[in-house]
View 1 (cartoon, helix red, strand yellow):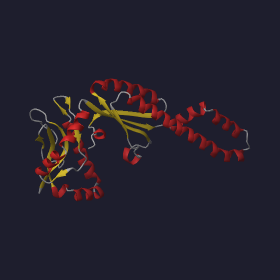
View 2 (spheres, helix red, strand yellow):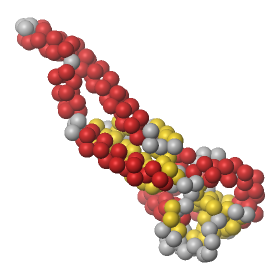
View 3 (cartoon, helix red, strand yellow):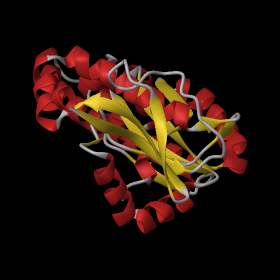
View 4 (cartoon, helix red, strand yellow):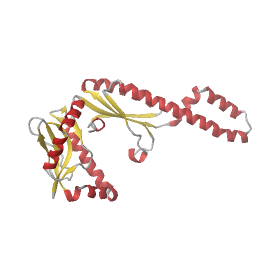
Length: 269
């Protein structure tokens, strides 16, 4: 039995849209279902393979399958964002949004029609950009703090004047002071970065810090932000982000900004 896999909802576009990618199953074509001034980007799928329970089992037993399908899901949405070299506002759906029949999808579009229009209105003419910052070299941050912090300098002088045995036990106190100051300085630097780019944005979301297992990096993430930028402000945003990138890398950080992305963070409804 075949159902419909929903990738996103967007404003109806004139003419036909050709999607270069196959659908989520790697076989079916991606196409659009018009609904008033909207259109849903969809493809046919086997309900036996893609129903909710089947996907949950795959998520536990076959991570490669999930990753492969998630990549296709994202690729189709990114293709749906662009037509005639223009970025289109759209509402991306979460992975695994499936309807058993076209009538079920139409019913959902009808029920949420006004809310969908409101969300699309709020992101039209805007782009989502992401910022992720990693702490590549903590020693640089510690060194800068030790050189500028008089309390730490005094503690180091005190330890240096003690007999070796006593100094050993005082090292833990010094480490605790340094760790506290590093965390305070780290939070302050991230706040400056966040606020510095937020002034160029219509909206912003400070997202959860991801663990190393999810980022695939061996350095800790320290900032994860999404910004919603007006089209006319994108160049300004990028110039400021590039300036910040050059500045922050000298302090031992890795600064990554990218976009435009589907507006996942600003299209909840």
